[in-house]
Structures are given as C-alpha cells and as structure tokens.
Length: 358
Image (cartoon, rainbow, N blue to C red; front, side, top):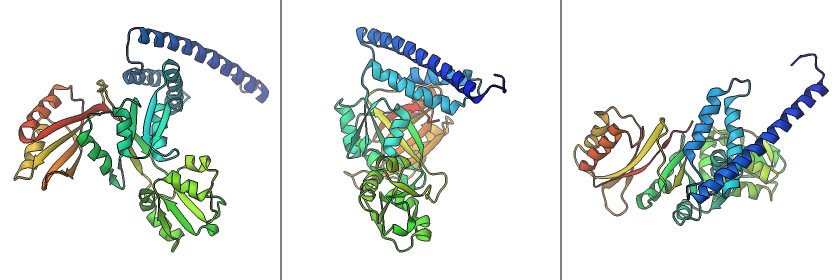
C-alpha cells in the first residue's frame, strides 16, 4: 500500500480486511458444523488432535509474513477452540482454582472456548476424566527449578489414563496488592513453590516480612484483594481477575522458569513424527539392575530425556521408575526396547506417546 495514505484511509482499509476475515470465519464455521453432523452420523470422535497439528504445521509452513508464526498459532488456537465448541462442548478438568498456572496452561493448550473445569486436587482431575465427566485433564508434572510433582507421578501407578500431550508454560511471578505500594506490605501469601522460586528476591526486597503458604496462587490473590497490607505472588491473570495492582513484575529468581503440564485422556495419541514416550516400570533393589534396565535403550540408541524414581508405597526398598524417551512407542526400535525391558522388571507400563511440546 502507498505510504502516502492518510491514517484515516489506512484504518478504513484495516476495517475492510477485518470484515473479510469475519465473513471467512463464519464461512469456516458453517463447514465445521457440517463436519460435526457427519461425525455424529458416523459415530466418529469429534476431537482429533492430529488434525489440529496438521492445520498448525501447514499454515506456519506456508506463512510468508510479516505476521509471526507464534501469533498465527495463537489465533488459530482460538479459531479451532471456538469451532470445536460448535461441534460439541469439550470439557477439560484442571488443577484449580481459576487464575492459577494450571489454568493458564489449560487455556494455552485448549483455548478459551473449551469448558474448563477447576478441580481441588490432582486425584480429582484424574477421577473426572476416568468417569467420563471430562474429555481431558491437565496436571502439573515438573518445574524446571523445583523438580517433579510427586502427586502426579503417584497417580499413574493406579490410573489407566494415558498422556495425550504436554504443555510447557514459561512461569512469571508478579508481586500483587490492592495499592501497588511496597511500603504497605506486611505479609506475603502464595503457594510454597512460587515462594521458593522467589526466595532470593524476597530476602533482598522484603526482609523480615512474613511469608504465608496457601493452597494456590489464586487463593493468595483473593486474600490480597481483601486486605491492603497483604501482597500475593501470583500470575498476571490472577491480578486481573482479583483487581490487584502490580507492585513488581517478574520477581522469580531464575529467568528460565518453566513448568511442564501433562494432558491426560483415555485415548492413545497418534504418531506425529516428533514424539515423546513416557514409561513407568518397577524393579527390585539388586546389583546391576540400573544398568540392565537402561541397556535395551542404549544399544538401540534411544535417547532418554528424563529418569525419575519413586519408592513403592506397598513394598519397602523397591522402586518405580519413570522414564521419558524421544520417539513413539509404535516405532520398531522403541517397541523392541520396551519388550526387552519387561524381562528385568516386575511390570512395565506405557503411560503414553505424545507430541513434544513446541
């Protein structure tokens, strides 16, 4: 467009483009409704994650710019989320309450149009999916600075649910209060993990101020919204929901602070070409067992990205290992390694093969 156009003319041109986008969105929605009718008639699953991946990959590969690919994915995440809501309501359970980082991760993966239902505990998320009350669940599994969430790993020992996807959320902690003034703060509330992740900043900037553990960052924000002497360490979303002002942004001690979440469901994910597989297996405490359980993967050059052990609650000195490896369990070398692993284990359980988080 000619750079000599006036601001008014440029805005009118943008409005005209927006009108075309609106027409195309509604045209797309009509096709989606027809797809939904066909799926219903043929009794097919209405949510097909592999189809979503194909849309993202095709569009980002074809995008000439200047609109950024990250923005393109976000826009189509919401278009797809709203389209799925037209076909059928998709309920997703997550570790609540709202405005927590689990809530943010769930919105990041499923968009704003899914029916997101907060649960009081990690077992409650599993239970909602197992009973069929929710199609999927979202639970935290590890933080880059604080380590694994043991409750989540323990749930997989009993549950038949599969990991369908993973979500990586970059975590930023804001200090929030009613007044936004550092001098008004007499107590700081938050979940124990954010307090630990901001320990150095708190010691340097609020020495001597009591730190109070609560069930979630959202609960902390709610308490701060009722008392101007209280500050909460919470997300920007929590500040917006509880009408709090920012005292300081991004007070976490580590810049690269990520939390990994798992999407759990009843189905096994299709192979995407860039997958991760999670396994759980139990072994007895005996000489050379660690070498023997890793050998099937090493000799096939399968890359293990994580290994974590947990004691078995019912048997002393016996352990359950959780392993993440690169690749899909349908790949021959991984299937062979898993089969060989069974010979030196009490049991082996594939928790899921799923696309690696971007």
